[in-house]
Length: 452
Image (cartoon, rainbow, N blue to C red; front, side, top):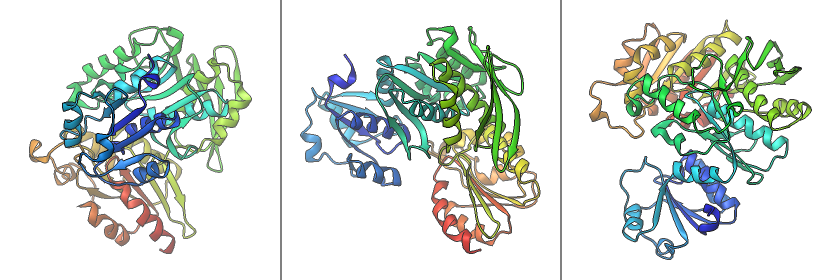
């Protein structure tokens, strides 16, 4: 039985998370009663409330919880929440309680699922695929790991035939999915706190790829060994699907797209970086295989605005440029800093970076150092701990990381100090980057920079 038919009420423990909120929006769009708890109010929870979802910020068993019938209610939780009275109540009353990844997997069982996996690139690729599905008016639902600038949301609903999902490798969550089509963008070492080493990460992605029932429905970036038959994609080199003839004109990228049987010239889009042309290439490969015509795909590529905090760029009349990005792995840092240096080689770059997780900082310290050395000046914020505790990682601090960075103009500070420090710096471009709560600097910087 479909999960939509089995339950009328859906309670989300941790409803403000990016993955949880997309699921909550899905059930709300399908006419279900959706409510939940989160620890702190945010812009996202405020938007959910505006959309009609009922959210509490207190860990109390209120009358709304007591009124829920366990036969018609599903409780969905995120493992990021370790201990909560509300969750204990639902367990003691024998409600069905499932992880977010399991619920998303149940949804994909009843749709033609397009799943995008990879240690980098999956948010942009899945969001672009969802955008192209909407442009083609395919009956689809999209569950995204970022806020689409086109949808102004991490969720889009246009029906239930297709589902577009970001396949998260953390905690091996993507193994819960039932993909009919899939993409693997990259399998760099990450989440070593879960996988232990690169070999186990690669094995996890091979297990994910094995879930796809048809070889020709699996698309893998050329050069990745995935352990089964698949189609390849690439940029500036031949593959089953590839793009080449890249050229810039007034901040827009033009490229030509090749399938096994034809060439389509002059796609235009505004998202910088060769890695993002790779993302566009595989999105075009999948949508063309779904039968969408290239005129529609050209319009969709041209109208794609990207994702919040994925190279979000602002220009000011005073000549200053502000870029905000979610990068939190050395490979991602190399991509975003490299793009800035390529497009603006003569401008002074101030990088404000917040490391994410003590374990990731420890595991990739040398790589982080080499990436951050490419800045002209660096503000290194304290490590954002997320689910981890400093006491379990003695000596792993931003000051420890800073010692490894061969850069004269560098400084370590707290998030609370960062904005005042930024105002003291001499720069042409300021780049704020990280996956924690560094996004709280965005509004103050946007308000201040025009007046500099």
